[in-house]
Length: 605
Image 1: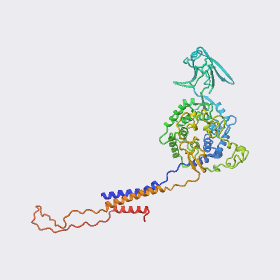
Image 2: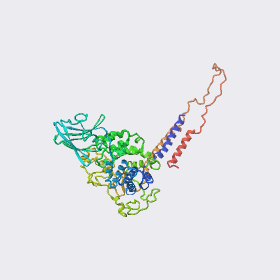
Image 3: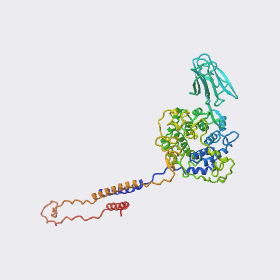
Image 4: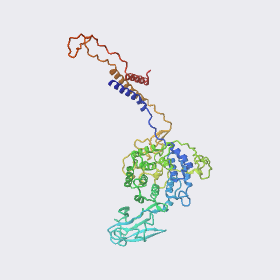
């Protein structure tokens, strides 16, 4: 029985060893190719119009720009966005103007070098006041019986109010507050100066007190106190951060988040961070990610990033939601959170549908391509005509529409002159989020401009402080083990491109590796296993059995009867016969058959 069990074990080992090379030799899964996702978008954004959505179309335009198709498919989207502008007030879309769409259109158009000068003015005109708490002025001084002047705009004029200050108290008006707090809503120009004027600018002049004066603006809501502005000076000019962005007639958190992100990255003076700090939901990835991206305070950025990391699931997703995961990736990439980025992208790769889309939704698919696969190497036909678009091959030079399939800056400069505009718009401000870097816009972006851009985090201690150098793929700086960076091919050899892993990749088709070394190694393993099995077979199955001990042909006596007496006749003599030869067992036959099959697989005849 033991021999049969051993034979079965050895046979199993041989079979497994023969199957091993076929298992190990299987090719590893190929890297995710987002080409089908771009093609799906093109098919569903006919002529650049993504489901009549400014939001989806803007992200489509930006995804195409980063993929290298800004002058074709991207410009189609830009032309559609421009067609949706309400010319009288520069808002979007013209049939239903709203702040969120207007801000997103502003973002896309500015990235393509289009004129956006009037859009910010419209957004500012539609601001609301979203903070209903107390706004107080505090002046810290030991001077007695002095006067400070508060100046504020009132229509076309500048109004001034003198207030009495005595050792930091305000004898003239405290409106029931502690004597060291001056109520800006109740003690200046009647009631609600701050509540009725979003982002109102105040000038506080305490020159009569002189040096050593500390001026602070404090916002109080319930038990929370925020020092929004503070300066150690005798004269201070500040903007009260009480604004929000509205949807309809009321302040709206989602609208404020998106508009605030766009405006902050355009270095606009319009800021709604304080309103958002009071209303955002730390468990919502979109809220936290947009606040992280629109905050410059390092301590607050650290807080928002940690809140974001805390809600990432083990599978890499955020609430198992594709849109929220794509949004969170924007912050993870900006913070260079490598492990978390990999997990999130792996999740998105696994959640794409068979057509290449996410949730069969244009906005979600465009957002994910912009964040997770920015700069991915894709090969899209330049002349692909979206289904149902019968006018895509028509072009009339001089119609102010640049048809990317038939017109260019050479054949029709009057229509296509915007396609050659550089990303750099020299205005003294480094707009990194809109494509400006210290490489393509050195006059705006440089070490020492007092703004810590992502591209400077590991190279400019003057702006960013002392940091530990680390490779961050996408900051346009070749660091550590990177072969290149960003989407610039200058660091690569001729015939290569810089992919989104910061590696130089050949444009020529790659030959599949033969894996000969691995196969040879597996062959040796199988050979050794076969030899071991053969030795075991010889040792345990071909060993001659030891003969049993006998006494030759000596007679054997048996007693007769129950008493065992010797008076009975002798029994007949009977010689012990050798055991008959047996045929091979079924286990032995199976083993030999397996060995024979193994020899055939190994090349034997």
